Image 1 (tube, rainbow, N blue to C red):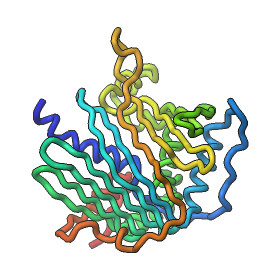
Image 2 (cartoon, helix red, strand yellow; image 1 turned 180 degrees about the horizontal axis):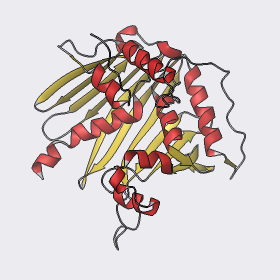
Image 3 (cartoon, rainbow, N blue to C red; image 1 turned 30 degrees about the vertical axis):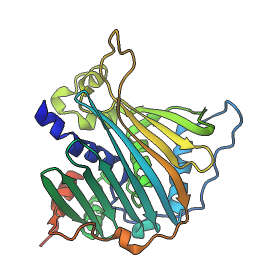
Image 4 (spheres, rainbow, N blue to C red; image 1 turned 90 degrees about the vertical axis):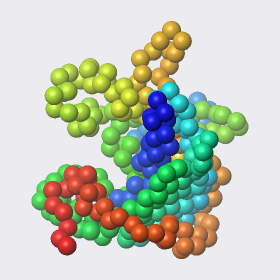
Amino acid sequence: MKQSFCCLPRLAAACAMLVACRPVPAIAQNASPPAPAPSHSAGSTASGDVLLDSAINRLQHHSSVSARVRLRVRLFGHELFGTGRYLQKGSGGERQVRFELSIPTSATPNVMISVSNGRQWWRYLETLDNQQLTVVDLTAVRAAAADARAEGLSTFSHATAPGGLSQTLQRLQDNFQFASASQTTQADRTFWVTRGRWKTDRLQQLIAPTEKEQVSKLFRQLSGRLPREVVLYLYDDSLFPAKIEYVGSAPATASNTQQPTFSAIEFFQIHFGPVLDESHFQRPRDMISEDVTDRYVKDMGLAKTRSR
């Protein structure tokens, strides 16, 4: 158990990185004017997919964004909390994103920093006994994506968002079927809330072939491996994500009748249009980095690796 607990901050940081700052091998993007928020009145509803389309469109048109971040992760019977910030600047292939998180433990804070400047994607992870800095060449990734699309592969057919939170919402929309969104008020703030369940075809791609017996069995196989559903909260005025909550699939018991939260990330104290210095989007640490571009290209499903 001690070994499992020691790896929790690393797993929590990985969860946060997947949620907030995975850059995109975008090839081109057709810009359109920001979409208006759905009109609403008390107790109103809206299409979950239409709401996500509007939120993604708005995120792509902000000149810059800063937000504070809170993370909560439950793993192996333990609960971890983290705090940090999210920065976004620019648009299209030149979008720059920084996501940083600190997860305190009894020994020392664990730090994760992810920075994408449109050319490189840096990932820095610091734990009690380890410091690691990796880099991905995004120019090479885009070239590999272009080759894949020229060959008719569909792996990157949806990869038109420039990264950051707009890409997070795009990936959620690609993988989950969202129900109608409704409004809720918490602490004098109004939010749009929509729940997404796995799209069967996308879920089957994540399950080994020997496990694809029946759709009804797929969800039972998710316990401890994948979230069962995602709950998305959007601020009703700006449609900026307020919270992204991944719900686990542990079986209900007499003392626990609700599915536990696997992870949740919240965004607050949000500012649109702040002046952000370029130093935020440079190499996060002055240390030797490991180039993992080829590994990333392979993980993204592209057959070819770049030439040396």
